Image (cartoon, rainbow, N blue to C red; front, side, top):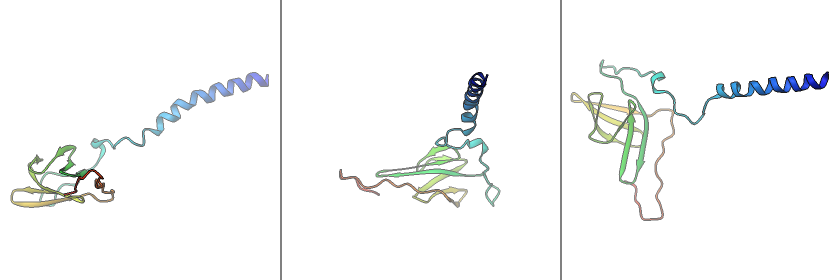
Length: 119
C-alpha cells in the first residue's frame, strides 16, 4: 500500500511541474510594449518612449515607441535629430525634445582589433 501511495504521489507531483514552469515565463523575453505606460509630454503632445539605443561604428539606431528609427526618421510627428548613448533628440514644431534612457544600462560597441573606429 505504501508503494502504490508513493507512485501516486510521484505522478501527481510530476503533473504539477509543467504548470509551475509555465508561470515563470521567459526571463529573456522583452516586456510587452502594450503593458508599458508612457507619460505624455508636458506640452500636451504625443507620448514618446525610448526603449533601446544601439551605437556601433557607423551606425546609430534607437527604438522609439516600438519603432526602429535613425537620424532623419519621423516618429509620432517628430523628427529624430540626434542619437547618442544616453538619449534620442527629437524636433517637433520647432521644439527640441530629449528622450533619455533612465535606469537601463547603455551598451556601446567596443573597438575591434580589425581597424573599426567608434564615431
